[in-house]
Length: 202
Image (cartoon, rainbow, N blue to C red; front, side):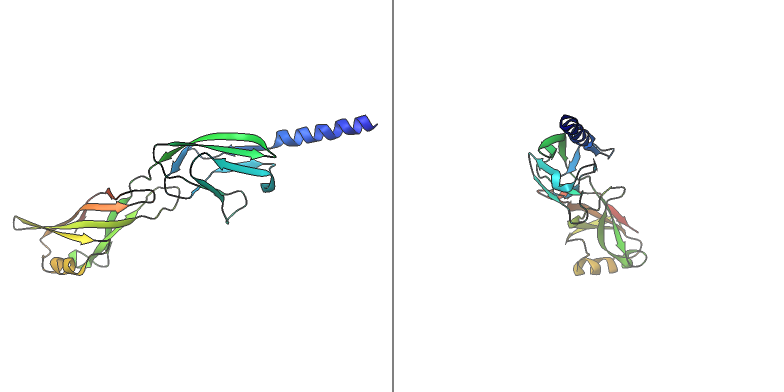
């Protein structure tokens, strides 16, 4: 009888261990954005957080305060790879190879509080279609004004239109062609600013 009870207990332990699993449920299997807290798309079956041990061979990893099974990975070296190891009760459930990639270029558009040049207030960045909210900022751009065959280019620091450029646009006239060129923005993980799209102000 004791042998039978021992066998049943061993069987139950084995079945419990075999039932524990982890799944990567995103269609993007291995992309991790540099410089950003990436929420890992992991789905666990029959695994308690107290039993879990996650580690990465590069970067950092922490549990989010928004959920027991939400883990955040932060990497820095674009183009490199890192190994994510997931253990439960000191046994490896899965290992994933993660590729560290640069955040895609955002789209730059105009900030308008009204119509035309008088309503233009600066530039903003947007990440259309991104699966995560990412913040980026405009470092600088040039205000290019073309009128009567002549072109003037005035630097502007930051995303908001500076006062000297507001004055420039007020006197440009609605028939002037105004374009924000040489737009430089910076995203998380960038070691330097990157060139982004021009914006025509109408």
